Image (cartoon, rainbow, N blue to C red; front, side):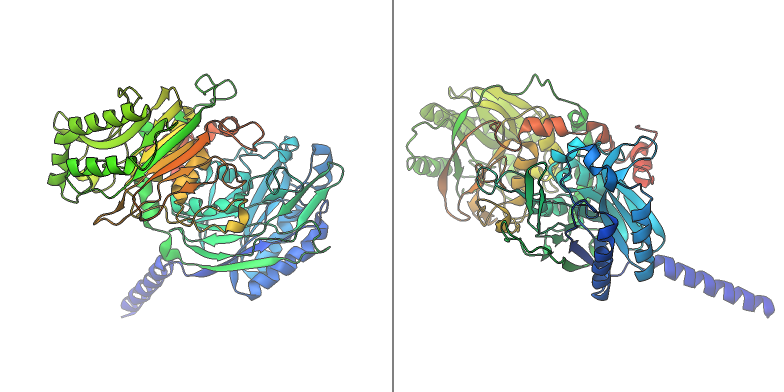
Length: 632
């Protein structure tokens, strides 16, 4: 009887243990604090930060973020000027916030300038603390102009830290322009991306209101591309360094996004001008994080990546790039969007000819047609395979268009090669000759049932610049576009069949932008242009049974500052949409493909190339460290 009692107690204890450890994560509230530190101070900012933490806790927050360089202010121009304000991690600063985390049973992310005790190097850093103490730190990977005068580039990669709230990664401000940071975090198992910034516009910049990128405006893409909750904290005041004669108006606008790209909350965008109050109180933004969304369709898409095609990502292509275009070209492009009848090639030819007559050829030198350019789409695999019989007829039609308009033409069709079917984009020169053939490399689930994937991501030289090709929904894989950027594409052309299945309309507050983008902007296409610094031209279908949503577009290199803002066609009208631009960003712009190339950190990108089913990837993913022996 006694033995039976002990046995029952043991079973009860085991059951309770399993219940405790197996219990799902619960919803919690995150807070992004728009804290404005006193410039050239450190400990003097602690009390106000403590008060902000207390306020967030009273309002139920469990995860609390402060902005970049929130203990000291941002505008330092040399190691000497920032030396009095740096601190070690761990050090006085972390000790202070560990006490707060323990007192309130919360998790806190803080941005600060760090000094490494061994090397005496300084870093723009962030740390995460919780009730158990200091959990980990991150050093900013991609440095912006001013901080490059005092900070070394981060050397920790993008670590991910396990907490009772979920797995948390941190990145800082200009890191956002390099998609690889958030991608690495997601691949390593992050659930939450803690993004901290000092994001705004230079005062008295030219053109008016421009002069610096607004990283806080780029968070929706990080959430969508990587299936992550993104909690983004910014500042909302003005900071000036009179010795350097520089000033920044921080725009606020902190945001919290869920992994499906839905904006959960946003703070107001600051419009306070050049004369803000002497003291600007913190604005605190709250939103609920639901751990049930840690596993989601965007996170699952990571398993569809094809690392074997991405090797160029790890190449260091700066500063002497032999592939880059040296000549800028004036592009006068036509993006043709229409509603095709399925498997009615002759009818579709007639419709396109009629549409084209509404546009005088003039100086047109590029024409882009949608996916399934002359055939339309059916969910029937047998019906789609039958479309391959029209490949030569379709080619002849577009050769006629190329010659008539003396233009390059990009179109899409189904091609059969030795009983294998491919989704193919073809580019013709003005003489109607085939100068590029691209077989879609990233197939969606329907396509995998009957199509064979291509195995090459190439850039093609033409008389109007270097052109890369992608097809439709494979723009969801930023690595594919990145390869084209590394190969120095001036343009990426995308025949598409988009009915809203990805890249939901951009929900960024237009107050961030000098020139607002159209309502039907696709955030994935928008991000592709920004991150590759290659103009992205998309031609899409409209209407039909699939309810395509048009929105053919030109996406430009620097949409935030208003240089060639996105130009987007109608959602529902058949039209020939004309766009004009000049390839290669002028040197006066704040960014360019060369700047992005120079700023890449390929030594950190190796995990992007690992076989996700291979042992090394598993070792890296499960390791507490970012760098592991199997690839280091």
